[in-house]
Image (cartoon, rainbow, N blue to C red; front, side, top):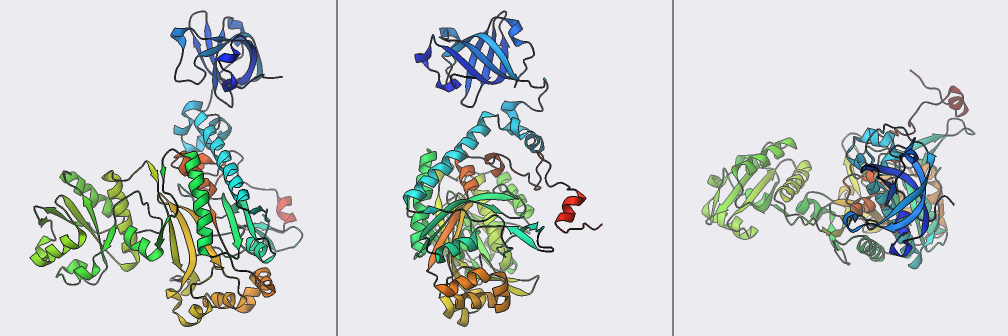
Length: 576
């Protein structure tokens, strides 16, 4: 045996036992004739005591070693209360080198998370030795195991769907895979198992789930990996929106309460329509820990003779800024201009009167109306955001976030969940001059076929919904369309002929001809769940081997060049 125990398996009960531990050399300390060595294994660290210098010949930090010796209690003056094994140590009789290590490391293991990212990813196997990174990967495994158990207990059947599939317009660029056997044709890696899970519903699988890998050629963000990600994908037959909400609430609430000590908002999660969310929070991913809310002042200012606000939507945010110095307001203006605003007007309430550059445009009656309608108190400041309709809500949302963070009113000790519902079914694409789907094209429109036939497409909503937590979109989902007639009409509005529909989505279109049940589901993102629970700023710190923000793998060198023979096999010729 190369070891009898892991470090943290040893307790006071083992004192006096002959043990063998194996792991990495974390650090040395020479105390004049007695050398202390910290051995680090998967579980933690153990102090090793050496009295023979020759045992350390060829041993550097991160050398893999095996130690044999007797476990003993530390003396009172050497106990380390900050370490789980700080009251015991191994007196070494023998040290064996199992794996050598270069004397110079590219970075300090315990400081790897503050090392520049390209170096961390190039030596990811060293980065993962950092106990904090290891804890993130362990947390991820435990969360996935916990979720799997919940879904099975709820009666869902785990089914794996294909990785090589057909290209499908689902909102992002596909990763394409050329075919060797079929010249000029391509597979695509699935952006999500969308069509397959709907086909499972048609096939009679009542409740499906899987921890599904998804592939999208998207630019990276702090909460989005640029290549692949994983989601808890589930679908239910004979289900409506509220049935899915109940499952999503149960799984998310129980998962978060299992893995955090922070407060978690209990079910039922708050329901907010897309339109309400954009108006009140300036985003469809609202952080409800921030108590600040955006109000619509467009109608009010239509009656005020202030030329800069005429004919444009106006938004307002009330915040308690009492005691804030002039520099705070100067910084608010700097932030506003940094995000593309021309300025940031504001009025501060003091002794029942407004003070600020806009006050002279308000009558006494208008001032009182504004104070009363917004419930303002002395010390409050009303900030104004005015711009074109297409951008005003987003700008107001960024100002809300900046104010909440700067004023330190965001509750950082909680997880606040909500559902965003009733997304628009379509949007106008100004580049292509056509109507596009806003989300998944296979969603059921609110009002069904009647809505598609009688309403302006831009006024049609869909049974689409997201779970949002602390400003992060954790899940998207929808009640899916199961009618071939609705499918034909929905795609026709987006410019697809029935022939194109049959060619691109023939499997689903044909399946709907043979009795498809109503079905609905959602897909919470595993990586984002782990990122929130691990309290990490970037999703890459909870993925074992991520691509960098530029979609590169520094460890293995992907994407990389391939041989001419490989290109010839798949009928590809690179020009230029």
